[in-house]
Length: 182
Length: 349
View 1 (cartoon, each protein chain N blue to C red):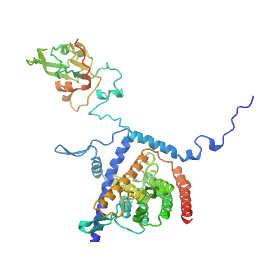
View 2: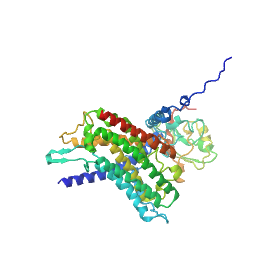
View 3: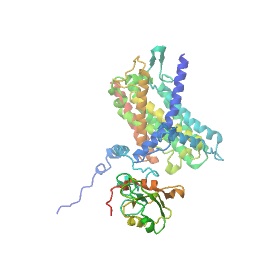
């Protein structure tokens, strides 16, 4: 059987040892092309603190979105007419083990045919909330939901108490899809 | 009247050069950010009564400048105070002055006022030598700054700067010689005129090897990556300007960018047809718009070269010191000599 030894290559035939390889011109060109493609490829930055990776608009990053059932900050759901769905039944307030929800009901306007009451104030004290999700379970109208957004940056305790407007606008992507009434 | 016009042009160039530096810093930060898939400075902006004057991010250079101005200006106890103060000045002045012989436009004929403005601060008949002399003076800033601080890292930086710039100046000069051989003149305005009629007349295509060598040597001259060994943040903290702070540091910074601007001016003038654009902007037009058009053309070409500077900086890693010396002495200088020999032979035959 013939020897399978390969003849040793001359120095110039070894990979990376030719004159062209050692001048690095080709590789520098490749590097420049690579950085140029990155230059026109768009940015990966999330404009924190205006936006966070937990926002609905950033869900394609799949950071903080692995589990859609993870429980974060609440959102008050709007109906098709842009009104809050909440009918101020106070069931969430009763279900809350941390006593962080405060609702003051008032009579709904005359032309709101589908309900008698609506919340005048709807406040959640995010410092007390334990993100258990009982409010979401208690709600008969799918008016309150927990989104995957775990936190929002604030600079004072007062800002941690979210009022109705704040809750309606919190992480607006999770308004959709509208779930059917229970 | 002639002196007044020259003075006006000189002041305009000086002001423009100082304005280019912050823009260049902004551009560098933006382009580096894009290369690294970031956004770059996008917060600092100027809005007066709800009207956005400057878009987001563009005020960043001003913010940086103000920050540097209000920083404490420290001088190390054992520093040589005179040289320590002198070095930042040397870093700025020669690099800015190097621009004075570069023609950034054709003669601007303003017929209504009977003026013929030479868009060049000084038409020295050996202009390119003046630029070379002034830009090599700038190494004194690095050497003085490194030595005067009386500290180990700046000293290393200063030493490296001296050795590096001396080695690459030879390659730079030799590459220029072959171009000057084909041009047959040292007058920069004349060199531009020679390249003004055809794209194939550009020295970039007539002398590709010289262009390449000059480009590499220019990177080394300006201490830009991949040749930024005098600064080498990862080894020498900040190199020659480690001990500098506040405005003195910012003057080093400015000097570095001014050197880039001047060098790109030289490259554009010698290799890329200067202010001319064959077929579109031809020399000798008497139209009022001819002057501004040539200046615009020159600025765009310069911006392209500066973009290339920045692009390369954020692509390549730094060379090791022995690699730097190898490339300079063993590769670029023999190549440049070969290029001169071949050019001379072709011209003589």
